[in-house]
Length: 285
Ligand code: SF4
Ligand code: SF4
Ligand code: SF4
Image (cartoon, protein in one colour):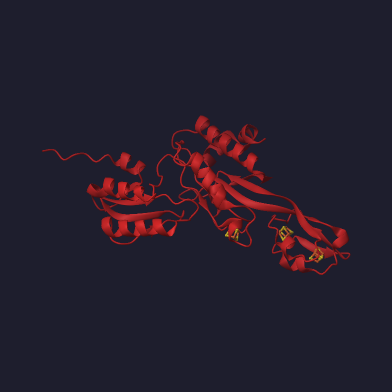
């Protein structure tokens, strides 16, 4: 009897990546913003022991993979994990899992709630089809721990400080706190060099005299970044966008990519081909 042909692409779309070993698959599981609760971790550990070789692999984009799942076990492993709320990851021509840092719910440098935003973006876009792939990363501040500039669509929390001169006692705490050399005390008052300022807000946190305050907090958006064989940094599209602007830009970006992107073309390549200005006109408010 002829051996049944394995539908690799269907398996891949369910998160099973073929290994170099015949009929073995690495099972990719969806993780949103790098966060997995303990109950799900237990279920994943059990599955790794039952269906794999008893270990997991953590990918560079915060995903969990269970290697060495046999072809015959793929359906059962999926079903068992799904019952525990652990869903398959994304691969192929789709919007990939959303990567995010702790953001302001935990990290003391965080300026935006990355985890909440990751949940919202995941709900709307995860697994949507696109010409090649769309990787989204959300980072809470300009320290950029999850490398938003290396993603097709990168989001970074930022805040713009403003000086209340009348409160400034020229103590220099802000100057010491600024790693960019963007704030200096001159003629007994703090001064910000806007060209050097990366909108991290460290000076605001350092000032004890209420002489620096938040003028606006929002998101800086980078587009067209990628790693891999053709690494490139994303282009800064907009600074300090509010959440409504962010979601509008993301929606229009996905639409633009689908409308104009050629099969197999990354967003950055599309921007090179059609020019950043045509894209800006379509997506910016
Ligand atoms: S990017 Fe900023 S907010 Fe996020 S973990 Fe790093 S330091 Fe914290
Ligand atoms: S930390 Fe505040 S009070 Fe001190 S120099 Fe800076 S702005 Fe002025
Ligand atoms: S926001 Fe950050 S980069 Fe800008 S002046 Fe303050 S500490 Fe320096």
